[in-house]
Image 1 (cartoon, rainbow, N blue to C red):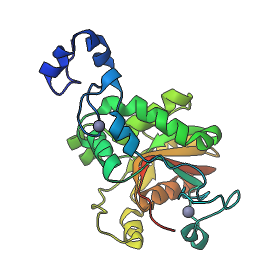
Image 2 (cartoon, helix red, strand yellow; image 1 turned 180 degrees about the vertical axis):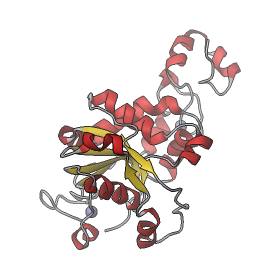
Image 3 (cartoon, rainbow, N blue to C red; image 1 turned 90 degrees about the horizontal axis):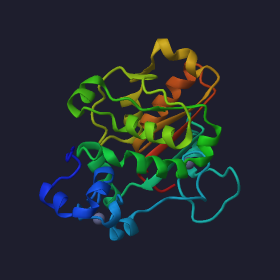
Image 4 (cartoon, protein in one colour; image 1 turned 30 degrees about the vertical axis):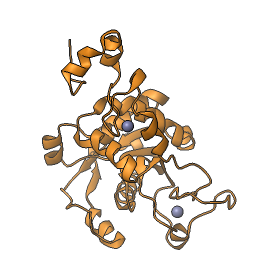
Length: 253
Ligand SMILES: [Zn+2]
Ligand SMILES: [Zn+2]
């Protein structure tokens, strides 16, 4: 039996009758580590603290609006400079509460969360998914893949694919160089940092010709990565690009 999903074998075996369920579902809250009754991803208090940004929002970047401003309304930033992607949407607002969830998934080997995240993404990105021909993840540089062992965005892309029957192209993009951490960079500096970092694998270029590609990533901060990936796909012949992320840093318009 594989007990690798449970952090504590004592807790794991102590749950007796729920053992069979625990093999399938994580017994610990992804937000705080408390045991979760019924095997959900989050305990009730952590669930209540999550912010799921919904409409109305900027038609391009997905920034939530307080009021409905009309179909196709754009935020100030997108009015001044329209991003190369068509639309970006996110399942969660990235804040102190969701950060733990995202980091546990990214660095903590809580990869069993991928199917549930796939459901959240499918709901948040329903409009994008309806128009998409295929999904593809933002790739890691191979040196990062080597140390981390899995690409969290690829797991999310497979999760979306399973929920929607959209084909997933996990190896469509290559990250040509390892980009320095974007942490303290200004938005223009971030754009320069990732500019030219991606390329479409030549053997897969035909797959995206005149197709609408849905790019999946874990977190969108300024959108610099999403923009670099979108430009690469459009230059390589994609008809349009939408971006769907698990979480999104909310700036003000
Ligand atoms: Zn919790
Ligand atoms: Zn916007």
